[in-house]
Length: 272
Image (tube, rainbow, N blue to C red; front, side):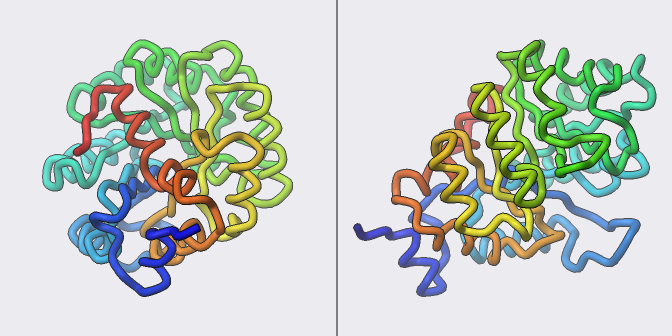
């Protein structure tokens, strides 16, 4: 079966006009732990233009590390500078649970579109009261959550999300990195089998094309989203893994962008 997306990638052509590509898992800006090149918004948008990524959903590194409030302000500014191209996640600071709901509402009211959690970098278990408030706001605002996960992480192993998936069935949750490594992929797939509001993403260097196909076969193409971790990882590599994985054209279109487009429409964001 001819696959124009695969053919374009093999030929080194941009996917603009061929497929809708929405990267559901990105970051941006300096990172405290090591140098990340080309992490400013203009550089990221230039690379997106080069390969055909329509929109990046992102949370600045500042938000998922030292200062979520300032990071949210940065995300708001970048979103306004590149409307429709950069869409920001609102990130809570879980160690002040009494402030989480209001902080998230303010960020969403200012133009951010969904909620991103990073229990590992914030050193706080997903089971904490501060994170529960994020699900309450997501339900109230009809939006979705992306959370970092990793196998064996005491803060956010995939299986720890079962309680929220059950209590908040109306809130879609993207299991970021799908658990991070093969044992985590299996744990995330098992979670998705049990709860229809659990989604997987392709973000991470360990998520090979074979694993992308397995995730699609296990949980359905409509519940797997393309993500790159840009600018941590080069999205050309990440896009190539998905496009050359062997997925059928209709499956690939869902994974690369149509699933994310549906999630965004749910929270009132319309992309052409």
